[in-house]
Length: 463
Image 1 (cartoon, rainbow, N blue to C red):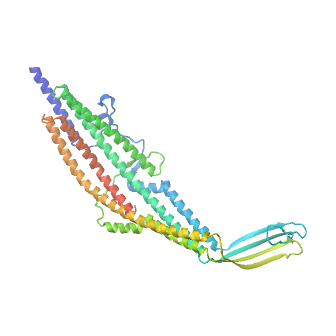
Image 2 (cartoon, rainbow, N blue to C red; image 1 turned 135 degrees about the vertical axis):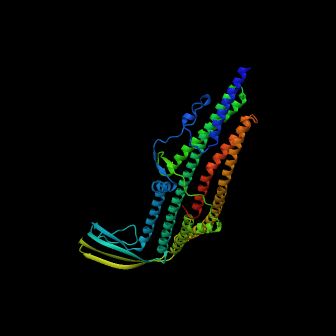
Image 3 (cartoon, one colour; image 1 turned 30 degrees about the vertical axis):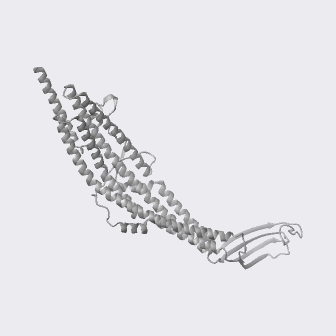
């Protein structure tokens, strides 16, 4: 009987010590993550415990503004959009060249039989004289009644639309940077929670194992503790994979083909509520969003193109001039020549090509106006949705903090009840699960709100 009481006292001492250690770990979720040696040695059934992901080489500390600046320099999508915009500016120069004089140099050498004439291929039969001559021909468009000027205006407006598309591409890349940056911070926060969860549940499993050996707890309690530990390790493995994937995604958005390991710096600015006037945000989006400006320019470009195609039915008046010299020639032609003239070209019939082109571009101009109206509706919806999401994310920050505080309190009470033998391990397991979920939600809530604000800025005035 005496040995039995000694054994019971020893078991209670071991249990008290283990519970004290478990309580210290679980009541301090903000402690720094434990290393691999603290959890990997007691992994059951060959399951390897978590190991802190140590980057091969940390390049530097990276804040969100630094990440945006790197992406603006390195991301190839921005360069592609800018080069395409520059290419459309050259189209404007190409079309405008029709308004300038066109000059050509001609060098001709001809030998023929005496009194040769071209007898086939045309109505006239010009005589060919042996000669070697050089000359210059100049043509100048006088007027085509707006056809060329409308083409130039259409090309210029299209180039402006491409400039806005380049700006839209830049804004889209910046939004992707913010999403990848805050996503990486989220996954890293979840990874820290997973590490602490594995450590705390490992200690609880050790404590229950000691009580089971002392016949103070049943094998069912030990099985529940091991199940909770295995679930925590699965949570850690998923969190580790998500953390590495998020960093790979961030590296790609920054324009790197390799994985760049950065130490991400969190925003020091306090969280402020989103703007309150949604109508003002929508009006601002209508005035500055590059997608709207691009479609407005495209609509104007389509209208000017329609006018140009319509004006093809009008005459074209051009001036021509030619001057040259023939140092080697037949005696029947002059040594030099010069002439000027005016040519009026009037379209009479071409199978209704010009009429069909004018109708086609008129319909395209109407379609561009409809696309602009549809884009305005979608942007109004996107701004309103982003504003609602930002408000909801801001409210979730405080609610998640309250949930975490209540979950920590519930876990403390569940541990005390289990230690006193007033509840089963099922109640403690449920409290642990709720505390882990609350801690993950609290860690993610702040980053979700900052990301929601970035999306709202992107939908309104840009980043």
